[in-house]
Length: 140
Image (cartoon, rainbow, N blue to C red; front, side, top):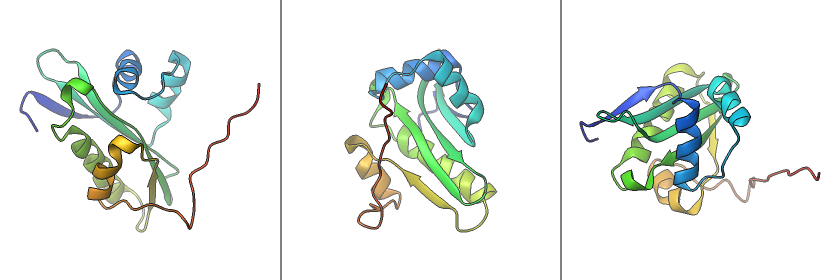
């Protein structure tokens, strides 16, 4: 990783979290949603540019601390993509699970098309047909 970029353990500031989700193509979130994310995640890391302090990549783990862990919010600012930051973030999250979670943790993620090659290169495999990711959207 470029020496001008620093991996930081913990979540970014709320404004940076919301901005990075938006610029990286993830669905925008409201401040109340983001606040809960920053305090309710099992682990979090982000990459910050040394000079400006700007957050340029991030990722987090949602988990129960027992056996189930889910990687989420893996995002890199488009200006900083193709530099290995996503690999660095996911690698840190997986290393953290290995270090702190009980043996045989079950780790999942939802892989959007742009990230599939990265996740596969790190050992993730499709869960289908044994299981298929699904989403529930309550009708309002």
